[in-house]
Length: 326
Image (tube, rainbow, N blue to C red; front, side, top):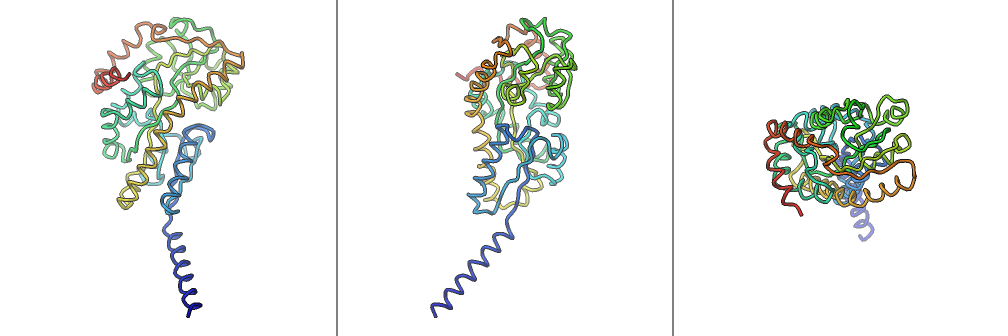
């Protein structure tokens, strides 16, 4: 009898295992950043925790470095349900939700720590609530990259030095307007082309962050790092609305909470990473680091504000919240 009971228990356990395997779902998550980037690391950590907490029901396969296409293509895949998830730049989302452009206001915040408070505040969170209706994807939360700066192949001591220069930018309106107001020639191109383009003069500089300058070795091709912290650069965690609708409520909450946790971890990560990357770059002795503030850009930040406050009045609310951050 004991032997038969053991067989029954083993059979039930095996059946349960097979059933769980049959019900398991692999979530495909796309990113445009390299596999070594902190966003990709956060996505991988999210996947590991989700697999553990769901007892293997859900796993996440990450596809970094634009393996699934550029962000516009991945957005289309999210909308059709061909892609489950993405850690996508807020820059791409602005193409469909223009109000999100306000997050890129010059000198809105000056550190990842301030960005954490603002992006978890009421105005930024309300933007996420609009995403299912406006882009067909659910927004879990925000993370951030290091603050924006410039790596230039020319001496840069004032905004005047940027006039006529070819600057590689992320091609979306808030950043494009900023550089046009500076008199620079905005030059979009894939990040993978920047290294050689700095060397051959196709571009004179790049709007980037310390992580990109270090990990992609742009510092080998520039001579001036303008440490301006002139903008934050948020990432948004997204899930296809079509996929979301097919999930049980409890699973939705588990996935959303796990994604939010690891997106939010990026704020603390970059608070540390920025200092490490800056020291790494300084230790190379290859570039001059020029630490500057808004004064380098003259009246350009104010002109940008006058243009964008009309396009996205929500900017006024963000400014108020930012001003209250200590």
